[in-house]
Amino acid sequence: MADNNSISRREQRRKRRKDEDKKAKGWIREWGDALLFAAIAALIIRTFFFEAYRIPTPSMENTLLTGDFLVVSKINYGPRTPMVLSVPFTNINFHAITFPWTRLPGISEIERNDIVVFNYPIDIAPIAAKTSYVKRCVGLPGDSLAIRDKRLFVNGEPAPIFPGLQKNYIVTVQDRVRLSTSKVEANGGHLVNRVGGQNQYRINMTDDLAEEMKSWPEVTSVELYVLPEDFDEYARADFSFSSGFNNHDHLPQITVPYEGQQVTLTSENWHIYENIITRYERNTVEQNGGNFVINGEQTNRYTIKQDYYFMMGDNRDNSEDSRFWGFVPRDHIVGEASLIYFSWNSERTLPRFGRILNIID
Image (tube, rainbow, N blue to C red; front, side):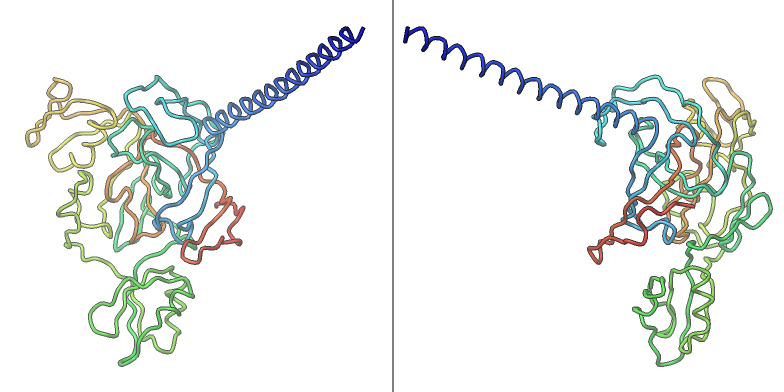
C-alpha cells in the first residue's frame, strides 16, 4: 500500500511539473508571438508610414538644429515599396540585392518650401541605400530659379525669407572695441571668423538678428556678405552641376527639369543635365564638344523621364545642397519632415526641452 502511495505521489509531481512546463512554454510562446507581431507592425510602420531621422549637421539651422530627432512622414508624398534588401531596423543594406519597386499613392504632392527628406542623389549606391539628407524644397518641377547677390528668385519673384534662415554678414565695430562672441551666440548668431581689419567680423545669423545688431552701441555697420560674381568657388569642385557656375551666391536662371520636358543639349548646358541623363535615368552618353551620342544614337535632344526638385538648406552659407550637386530626382524622395520628437544639445549635454514635440512648419 505504501509503495502504491509513493508511486501515486511521484506521478502527481510529474504531472505538476509537466503542467508547469506547459504553462511556461505557453507563456514564452505568447510573449514570442507578441514580440514578433510588434516587430512586424513596427517594420510596416517604418516602411510605409513614418520613420525617425536625426539631424547630424547645421545645414538647416536655425529651423532644424544639430541633434534634433525628427518624425518623417512617408504617407504625405507616397511611400516607396522596398527597393533593396536590408537588415530590419538598421542601416545595413545588401547593395547587390535590389527589388522592383513602385511608389504608392500619397495624400499630397510636394509643395514649394516643404522640408523634405531624400536620398543624397550623387551617392554611388542603390537609391534606398544612399545617405538621407534633409533640406527645404525651394524649386518644383518646371520652376524658373535664379540667385542674385545671395537672394533666391522663383519664377521671377523673390522667395520668402523664413524666420530661421541664416546667412553670413560682415559686422564692423568701433576702433579698439572687440565684439563679444558670447553676446553674439546668446542672441543666436555664430562667429565664423575675423576679416579685414581687427574690427570686422563675419557672422552667420538671421536677417532679424542682423537688423537688431545695427542698434548695438559697439557696432558701426552690418552688411550682407556676398561673394563677387567672378569668384570661382567651384574651381576644384567634384560636382558636374556646379562646374558651369562660379559660386553659390549667384546662379543664372535655370528651369527645374520635369517629366516630359524636351531639352536641347549643348556643351554649355551639359553640366546641368549630365547627372540626370547618365546617373539618374541611366543612359549611355558619348559627348564630344556639342555632339552627343545617347544610347548609340547621335542626337542633341533628350526627353526628361521624371520630375526633379531643387533643394537648399536654411543655413545658406553652411549647406552643401542643389547649388553644388544639382537636382533631386522624384524617385529619391523619402518623405516630409513633420515633427521634432526629441532634441539633444551635445554642447551642454542636455535635452532642448522647448523643442520636444514641435510641429515642423
